[in-house]
Every structure is written in structure tokens, then in C-alpha cells.
Amino acid sequence: MEKDIGRIKRNDTSDIVIRVDDFGGQRGLTIREFVTSDRYTGFTKAGVRISAENFPKFKEMINSISEEEMKETPEQPAEKTESEETLEDKSAKRSKEKIQKKAENLDDY
Image 1 (cartoon, rainbow, N blue to C red):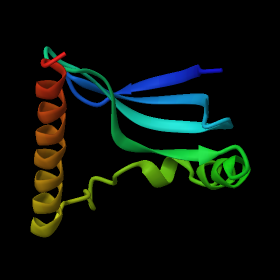
Image 2 (image 1 turned 180 degrees about the vertical axis):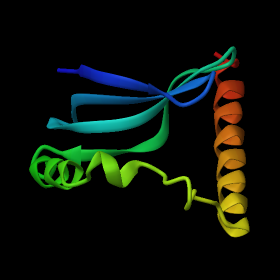
Image 3 (image 1 turned 180 degrees about the horizontal axis):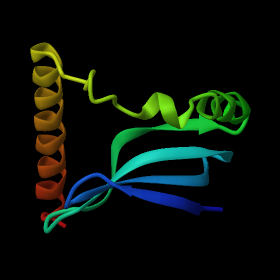
Image 4 (image 1 turned 45 degrees about the horizontal axis):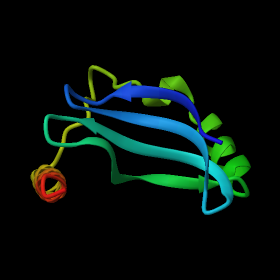
């Protein structure tokens, strides 16, 4: 059984998909990146799976976050450090290279 709960648009070519599914016979919550491009459309490896067993704790943790905590205050905007930007840039580049490589391999079939 697969049930999409919702999508969050990440950019022009990718969304974050939240779904309840069965993987390997185990029910759980999957939060995964879904890309749409000319060369590849589908889920990437980027994401996380929360087993049904761990879902109550996950839900408790998420519900403990207030909307107020998620707001940036004008006096203290969240700024990325140079090292954080570098890590994100490297990670994005690696992800893009992996997707392109997979897409190139799909052309062979």
C-alpha cells in the first residue's frame, strides 16, 4: 500500500514527497526527494524512512516544535557559515552528478 500524504516544492525540478508505504514488508513513513527532468523522473536516494514502530516518537518530536520556533526574527536572520555553504554546494553537486550518471545508464536500455 502506498499513500502519498503530500508534496513540498523544493525547486523547479524537485519536490519532497511524504508518503506512507510498505517497503520490504514493513509499513512506514517515507520522506524522499522526487525529481522531474528530461533525463530522469523519479525518487532519488535522498530521504529518510521512519518505521511504523518509530512513528509515534517521530510524531511527538515534530509536534513539539511550535510554529513560532520556525520563524526567523528580523533581528536574527539565519545565516549560513562559509563551511555550511561549501558542504551544501558539494552535496548538491554530488547529487546532481549521481542523477546524471543514472540517467545516462538508463539511455542504454
